[in-house]
Length: 127
Image (cartoon, rainbow, N blue to C red; front, side, top):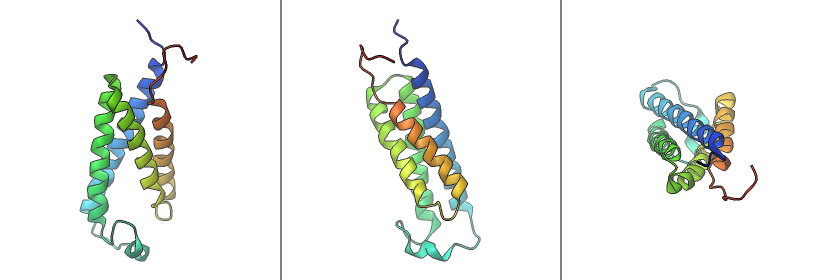
């Protein structure tokens, strides 16, 4: 049994799962929020309503959670989708730094740390 990289796989799956759960909480917040919306949101990339961001975050969150399960099952396609989804999670958090700096930096850190750890490893590569 080859356990090389097992710890990194578990880390990547947990990081992807946590990022997915956080994104789903964000989508729930966006759907339920009825307060004042920042004026800068009018010029935002995905439109002027939080519902658009809620749908985006919901889809990204579901993809991240599915990738977490796939990475634990050692699925190669889930690893590659996990790399892409981790990058999307980090990039999508960059736009919210002016509004929620700490929360956005946590997302960016999780996305950046999860993406490279999901990559497939060569059999003879040193750990």
